[in-house]
Image 1: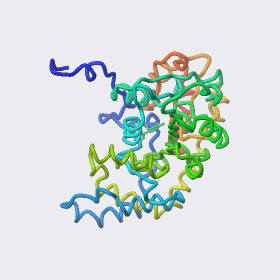
Image 2: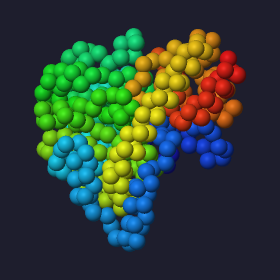
Image 3: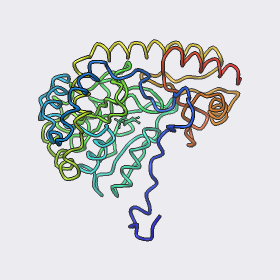
Image 4: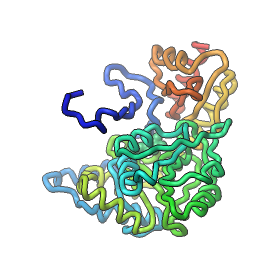
Amino acid sequence: MSRYANALTEAITPYTPGEQPQDQKYVKLNTNESPFPPSEKAMEYAKEHLRSLNLYPDPAAEELRSAVAMSCQAVREEVVLGNGSDELLYFAFKAFGSALRPIVSADITYGCYPVFAEALGLPYEEVPLDEGFGIRIDDYKDKHGVIVIANPNAPTGRALEMKEIDALTAAHPDDVIVVDEAYVDFGGTSVLPLTKKYDNLIVIQTFSKSRSMAGARLGFAVADRRLISDINKIRNSFNPYNINSMTMSLGLGTLKDRNYTYANCLIIEKNRNFTVSELKALGFEVLDSKANFIFARHPKISGRDLYLELKKRGVLIRHFDKERISDYNRISIGTKEQMETLIEKVREIL
Ligand code: PMP
């Protein structure tokens, strides 16, 4: 650190992303990416737009916002795009959090939430998951601020039903509820329809997982137009060109090829079922997952040792050195072949 860093910068503990090794080819099951390439149509569409890279992108991203809105039964004014959904989470925290409105989320959830809160100088409150790693809506009864729920949650994969989010939002008319649906397309239920019913609910989704575009960085938020306008105010004060033209055209192409996305999600669900039953047969305890990853532990080997042994054998999974979950590992679901390799290596290690 330089001697010029201010107190806020000095205090920040940044997020540690999953490893992205460049040296060796791994079976990569550690960052919940899609194992499938972007849709062919999306890539063709992007190629046509290469010639206009000399120009700035449309700062309002009208065409893509309209297409996203249409896919969510919303209108353009109810949608804002982000450079990944991370950016939108950050913008939402900045727009709605304050000293009196803490960011409130589960003790075991996506690691960026506390990091973003800290970077923005916002208070952060944790609500413990129940014994089975589930979110109990009742535990939020006396909590106020910006309540963030990852649904399905990460790294557990467990999901809430629409009626639970409905009840939570109804019970908190003076708070902002952010539902992070990064993994909703793998078997969860989206609460997008509830954005018509409540003016304090923001639903955030991403093109990084089910839509195979993690490298292009694209996410979107859907909410009442007044909430969206507040987030847009922050976006326009930070980087009005936050979505580059290549990503815009890839996004448009992807939305025009929804069958491809849908088919890939079904494959992931099938491969998840296969992996869960194989791991259970080997003695693993696996949480019920509605995401493109599973969270599992084995009584005979620590989470850290399994992670290290798999890494030695060319398979990367994610281990979190955190109390309550250090016995577990998060394993992304890839192709059938990748999952077969994982099972083979796990069997060898056990
Ligand atoms: N939310 C959750 C729960 C995630 O796990 C991730 C990915 N690490 C994100 C949001 C951010 O994804 P992206 O910025 O790629 O859209």
